[in-house]
Image (cartoon, rainbow, N blue to C red; front, side):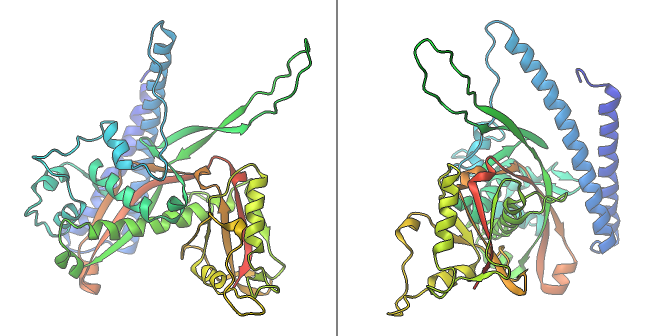
Length: 429
């Protein structure tokens, strides 16, 4: 590679290939002995998979640097075309369409119907590819150290299902497709201040300032179990299995986006991002109701005002189902009628997710929770365009009559503007 010592790329390839071989040997040994992996083997296999992928990401980075250098040289030549820019996806745009537009796969034709993730998964699990010849051909040559690399047309389908099931995505989070292990995205950090000018006076510069956030694809391993009854009874083309699969991935993406610690390998979620406003409610937390004595709707109104005070427009609030129930039960003190939310909260929907805990310790209270308010397009979720499946054959069939898959998804969380979010802590009831 240009500008990179050949020995460096070779060492990375050797490390990647060695990790891949070690992971495959663990799988082969268990398969030869007709058993599932032990706990120790599972941990070893996971370490080898992570090492193999980290090495692959390093190779991707070296390749991207070479491409960037070639593009920069081309731009310096007169008449050269401008380099392609990155793309982000809003809530209403699909990863599947994005990948298809960029030629990552060929769209289906009338003579060749769209592939089905359900048929693909059935074939991997049962070895019966009847009616799934197209999916079988797609599976050939996709076996990696971590299992089967799901082909792009199917992977993007599941990613879109997970996005649709994700609460933060429904609130408006922005998806950043990642075709390599790392990705830099520019963000605005200062808009400058316009100023009035007297005639013939010098103009005072007030330039906008920028920096960049760097996405590093982190490995999310999710065990997905599906009953034998679901495999046998669900029609192969209705997407029941795909929706079940995507929904389980969505849960962990929501948790990481809201609560992720940032301690490797876990991404850093909104709660733990520098610059996000944290609003505490009392040394021991505060109850939501009843009206006049508890938090009522006031804390939600204050959170909306705080986001607007930072020059952002809040478009959703996310809380726990218990919090939603407590807010819905607020009543007028005199009539005992249910109290409607005030007009200032109109048009700002609330979404509930069980991923927000309700048993947090605040002072002497052990039943506290969080409420998130923000302009949610400022939450950026980087997702690799492919993921990997490893079918676990023996243990779950014997224990629970279920098929089990390890799903390896690569993702990261960043905030375009931390000031666009407020988190209320110590909310009880």
